[in-house]
Image (cartoon, rainbow, N blue to C red):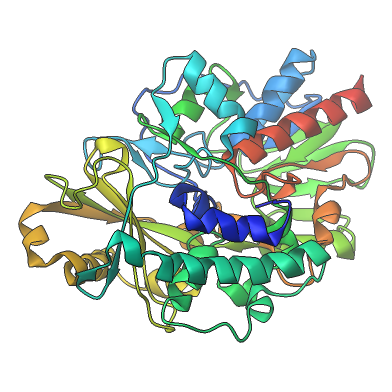
Length: 457
């Protein structure tokens, strides 16, 4: 989200790139890959040079770099698959379905774009196609400025405070801005982008995020990442429970046994770290623990609906928005994703948390009701089936992606700081500008692995 000035944020709204507006829909993903990943089973050495915890993009990247440097590495993953919050499967709908990461954010800085193009994936710039509704009435193109002007006003107010370094909430920065489309704009900037309501994220942190054009991968982002992971060996279904750093090196306790190593790289989410699921002995410094708690996880979930034909009439990868009330309830829709007939009806922030308490059927009914209110009941005859994600209830993530709470942006540096020159941290939350993205996770893992290699060789 980094711009030269808040005015440039406002200007971007005049001809909106909605893929960019919703770029933080980084939501990780789950499922069975379109192209089966070549998962190499790791041996379980009792005394490697480095243990890497978590086989998402950060852990896979770190392991690859360490292996290239000639170090013995054991990568462990608590689940039965690789990819973390980036996961594509075709079982649910018969077409690529990204449970989480779907947008290839900031294409110019995103190494997965170049990888995808080089290896024959159908990667392409996110289109700028959208429809906007007020109830069941579609706004004409000439009326769209009513939304984009509200969006630009909020962006400008939030960006002005972020650029000045006033580490307040986005809600405080935007206080007093009201209008018929303000709630929709607040949804787009907050829940649909950050996975948090405006009250719950720092404008300085928001300002620190990199900005740029988004791309898509027609085969699914998780499929691309699984291919990139190649033959990196991983020990699946292996949960880390305790890290003892009281003496030289570290001892990592897992449900498969103990591992003694010279160093450990921890790539699990800040949600998992804050939960205490991995115990550290001795206890980590207070500021490090505070960084886990206040670089906190947002929540962004898909309610994915499959239709037998394109009921939205925009072709592949359009966006559907509508005038929302101030009750914080609403969805942002990516329509006909990749041309596969899937509509990602996405929810974020407190409304996403509320909906996680409901059944999958209730959530699907809710999304269908929202679409029916705009497009009419004729869509029912084209509806095939739906599915939902629940990242806040997944014990291996406890949320979707991280951002700093108001007043906590300075804790980003504390989160990245190694402990005792042998406990290192990597992941999307640790990247300076591409946080909340799979690309940021990968680049963070590579950077930290180079630091570890320098320490050990």
